[in-house]
Image (cartoon, rainbow, N blue to C red; front, side, top):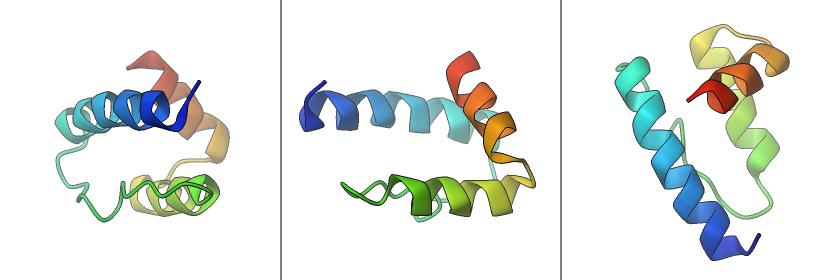
Length: 61
């Protein structure tokens, strides 16, 4: 998967996450190449979920 494909896919997932968790901000879901773990950490803290729970939420979208 190319970086463009990854960003496009993330943009779709980000929209779905914002629908499900309206209190998330664009900054919470800011994805920079090479900073995936940092972004997932922000989401974990904001949602109060474990890394595995967060992955399951994203997969289920």
